[in-house]
Length: 60
Image (cartoon, rainbow, N blue to C red; front, side, top):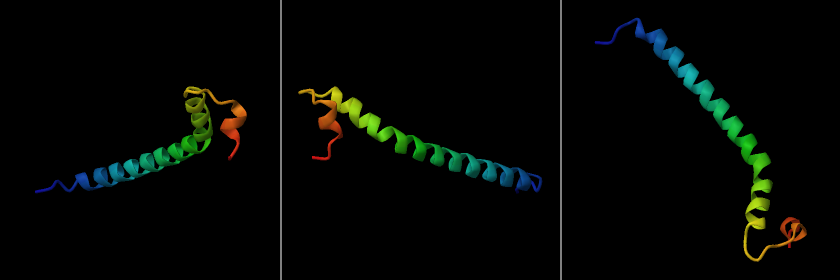
């Protein structure tokens, strides 16, 4: 049988988990948005043969 005093604790825990998961997803979205191009540049500069920065940034 469940303890009735645990109801508010569970609701608070659910709210806290929801808040942290929302914060984590927003932070991950910002990190992916601003980190994608630098990641492509770093990976491209470490490939063989080494392309110039212009070749990495041009769409063709």
